[in-house]
Length: 312
Ligand code: NAD
Ligand code: UDP
Ligand code: UDP
Image (cartoon, rainbow, N blue to C red; front, side):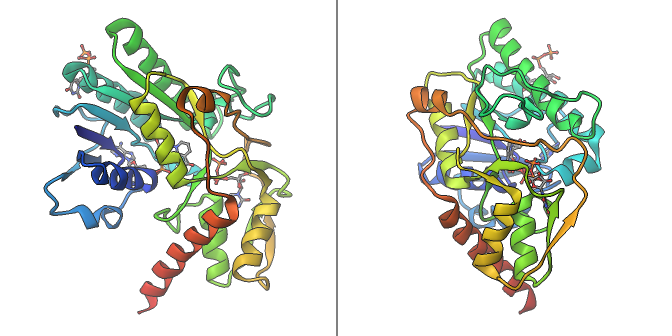
């Protein structure tokens, strides 16, 4: 098949592309390099199965493909909040354009949505039926509400134009290729420990997250795209940790002498998050397989290599 991956030079997109090309597909990687980097996909440059398109999804584009994985959107709060109006445009206009493209060529369309559609959840763990607790005027809403309208658009294209859609609600995912200055918790704690800096815990660190290793997530996305269930379906790891536990785990793994420092909790920071995986298990026969300690080792090795390469 010929497959379009928007946001393909980013963290998850680049791992997805590796898998799709190894499966024998032809891949078009579309990215504006806002938070993605050519380094993530440079090993495919020159390969006849790979094509790189520098383009912003908020502008229309005509391409002929069989499937679209729509991932283009900054995922880290630091990045999506640095230009919130652009984040809304990417989620709304960008998703509309990619849906228009999929409709025109009758391609199957997968939306990378997020656990953020549940906001600061008062139901725990979160099943797909839960409608969420989102502040529509807060600093996270450009992303949360942007993804919610992206889901709405996908379902309206399905109902109005019979478009084949798939909607994945991705929970916190980590792994190699995350940007060091990305601002997300796993990348921050790893690079801070490796560089001998203090680990910055926001609030008292009692808020929880559930961390999924990227290869598990990619497997879930591919199963969703190629199965019959349209979703929305939660994809994540149900292992739930407080941020303080995560800090201590990474501290122990890299540098037990590293200090923890406490910083103010950002506005609207969700207190808890954990996926209910019943639907992914039932419809995709999917479960994550990589435990946190193993995934962190692989991620730390990648960060260590990049930081060492800098000083050479
Ligand atoms: P990322 O920031 O590494 O990747 C996003 C990619 O999209 C980057 O390469 C960026 O340059 C590109 N992009 C951004 N705006 C664009 C635009 N207007 N036009 C073209 N390209 C654009 O993030 P990621 O972690 O790989 O996330 C990928 C997708 O998965 C995002 O849609 C994100 O919302 C979703 N998601 C990720 C997580 C996670 O924990 N990583 C959780 C939930 C949802
Ligand atoms: N679009 C695109 N590529 C295509 C087809 C459509 O970028 O191959 C854009 C198009 O410019 C429009 C959006 O997708 O802004 C929605 O297209 P659709 O055909 O659904 O709606 P319409 O153009 O009728 O408003
Ligand atoms: N966080 C933290 N220190 C950091 C970065 C993040 O304590 O250096 C916290 C953040 O406040 C949140 C959690 O870790 O409670 C996850 O943050 P991240 O930005 O990775 O993702 P999200 O909030 O979107 O789940």
